[in-house]
Image (tube, one colour):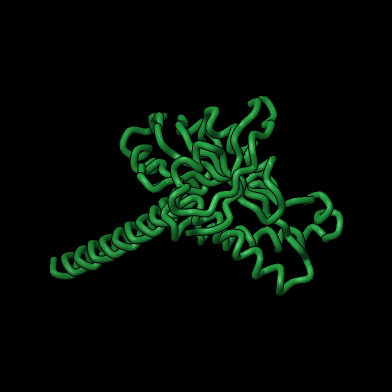
Amino acid sequence: GLYSAIEMGLYKHKVESLLLLKTRELEEEKKKTDQLLLNILPAGIVKELKHQGYANPRLFEHISILFSNFHDFSGITQKLKPARLIGELNEIYFKFDSIVQNAGIEKLKTIGDTYMIGGGLPVERNDHAEVIVDTALKMLDYMDKRNRKTKLDWKLRIGINSGQVVAGIVGTHKFTYDVWGDTVNIASRMQNNSEPGRINISGSTNNIIKEKYFCEYRGKMHAKGKGEIDMFFVNGKK
């Protein structure tokens, strides 16, 4: 009897140890999965997905959207080997990501050489335009310093617009947190109408930030599909 009791005790101990190990492994996996989700989607959205299995689309009344791309990107791609090009972009976007993260705003996506950011969503904030313009200035500053150190001359063009958007998650595979609305289209036009090394903002963004930044009026300019829009260059902080 004593022998089998000891045996049972050892067996029980072994099972408990294995269960503990499995639980730890599962917790580690869960942490990795959570981290992956947080790298793809905003924290609040991840929470919503976990609790209810889906995230509700939302209308945001006051946000700012930034688009940036590189002047003559196709010219640069022809000069570089693919591995070098990806290495360069990776280094640049790594820095942009850290600027965006430190500012507490949201990187929405990259498409080729286009980098898109949103301020004031999914967490609303009153200083959305200011924080986006500050981010734009930091991005330009980084590119300026970087260009002085390397032979390549990456010329960043930035466009910003403020207004309302609908934001949410689309699809069931490879989903992304995305934004829709005229505000987004105009932000994209601001980038198209910008110049290398400059930040081009719309009248609506200018109205919010003009007390704190030096903005140079460019006049009413044609934005494809949107007609004539007031545009301004941001020349720095006051």
